Structure formats: structure tokens, C-alpha cells
Amino acid sequence: MTDHTNSTAVPGAYGRHRRQIQRLVDDGRLNDLTPEPGDERLLDVLTRTGHRTALDVQGWLTTAYLTGTGCYADPAVRAASRLPALVLEEAERRHPCPAACPAPSARCDGCAQACGSGAHRGLALLFRNLAQALSARQRDAQRLLNSTAGPE
View 1 (cartoon, rainbow, N blue to C red):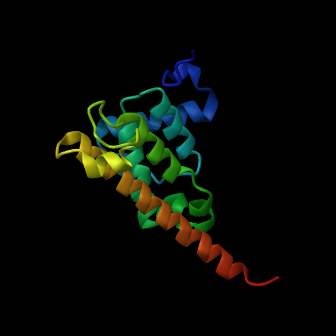
View 2 (cartoon, rainbow, N blue to C red):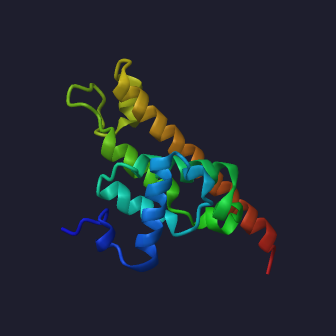
View 3 (tube, helix red, strand yellow):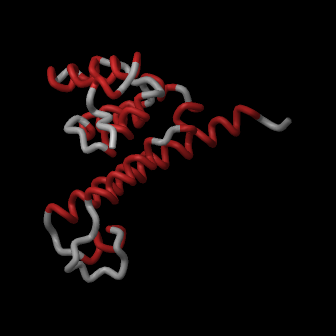
């Protein structure tokens, strides 16, 4: 399996951009960079490979998405974004129900209601609520695009 977090495994401008983001995360200055549409692809790679900066990049993109800054200022970009799905996938991958959970589902939608308090429940709820907020923002962008297109 290819290590996508290795800069030699990621060619050209994409690899350079990944290294730039890595430096900014290390310096605590990621918010100095304006998100671009290709950054979601980077997030997907970082998440799938378990790279240490994945959550930093997810938070940075989520903030831009919810505030409508950077590439997310464009409703068409928000409407076509994979970010809501990426956040939900991360929630399901990182915070599955514990084996002892009394919920009938393997997903934490039910677990969040059935599990007692604790870190698992809190993180599961956080990621699910975040994914819901992103999805609502995406639906708003789609409605905006549909209303400005008007009848043909």
C-alpha cells in the first residue's frame, strides 16, 4: 500500500501543497491559508492514511465551509462539496459504538442516545452534529443555486 502521507509519494503541486499545509499546521498558522477546492482531496488522503494532521485540516476546512470563506464562498463549491460526507465517514470510522453498547445499531446515532456519558458519546455526538451542520449548509447552497437559476 502506498503511503500517501510521504511527500515523495504525492507528485507535483499536490505534494507541495500538502507539505505547505503540514508546515502551517506545525507552526499553528493553518488559518493563514485560504482553502481551495482540492483541499478536500487532501483531507480524504490524510484521513484514510491516519496522518496526524487530518483533524487539523478537517477543522480548518469545516470552519471555512460554515463561514463561507475561501473556495466555500461560492455556493456551487459548497453544493458540490464532499466535506459533509468526509466528516461523517470520519465519525463512523473513529467513533463506532463500543461492543457493550445496548443500542441496536452499530452506528452511534442510536448509541449517542443509549450509551452513558463519557468521551465516546461526546465525540460521537460532536462529529455527527458537525456533519449535520455541514449538510444543512450544503442544502442551503443547493437551494440558493436552484433559486438563482430560475425557470428555464
